[in-house]
Length: 371
View 1 (cartoon, rainbow, N blue to C red):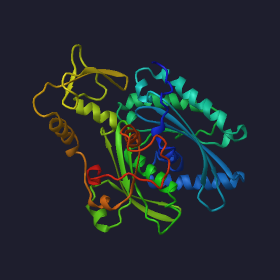
View 2: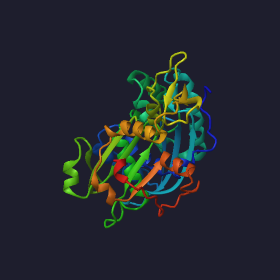
View 3: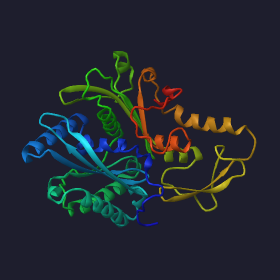
View 4: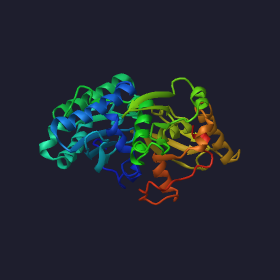
């Protein structure tokens, strides 16, 4: 229980590496403002290729999510003045998430070192010193008090600095929700070749994590840009093209955090002795336990009375109605949904366990509720 363990079954919900490629392509330097980060990454890729005269590039990204820590090892080839081409990925995942070690920081080291061993086995020895190593944390650490989150980041940074890979001063950080969404959007459009095809319309992205949910898309009308809430439109330049994106992260509406909220719990707070959480979204008479962020909650269904479906629906609507902004433009856009969306779709039998065909899609009946 103390050390991170490889989950069973393996993290197939990662949608082959859709939730991973974005963390290399832009996420390396998204500690700064988005525009500066993208420009910095672009120049880094160019300088590393021209300076070392290598056609092969590697990048190592640790994705510290709320439910697990994942390593993504990317192998690119790049021709002069062209966007790098992804040719191979390696993915491993461990649970629980890094945030679960907030009160026992030293115990997080075993899992980090285990994943670094995977990187040493995958990246050629002669390229270790030129291969960037980065960790970006998401909602799990954003939900922690800043002091606890920083102690975890400092521990990881110490471990990284002892590794043989390329480590910079900004190698470990917490991403804000907007940058996380923009990074994922770049991933999807990188994979669908929309960034290389001027006439091809960019797709939107939906990313359901354990602690937050992100939506990002490229508005096509002036009305959509002007009617968006303040702070949700971000402009940046990448490879000689200016992009204006709508991006927002709903902290607390990730799969696990939303479940806790619907049950009536509070993030990071254990129940008192003899206390339990009661919800109409559980069957009447049900009693059990549910673990979230290393806290075990006693849960039970409410007694029969008001129709359960209506009661549960009302609880969920109450949670999201005051937080979620709707925009009409999404109904005319194609979206790619990944992370827990994929996991839930597999569990519901909507798609197969191996669904890596990017030409397929899932239609959402009322996509406006997702924005």
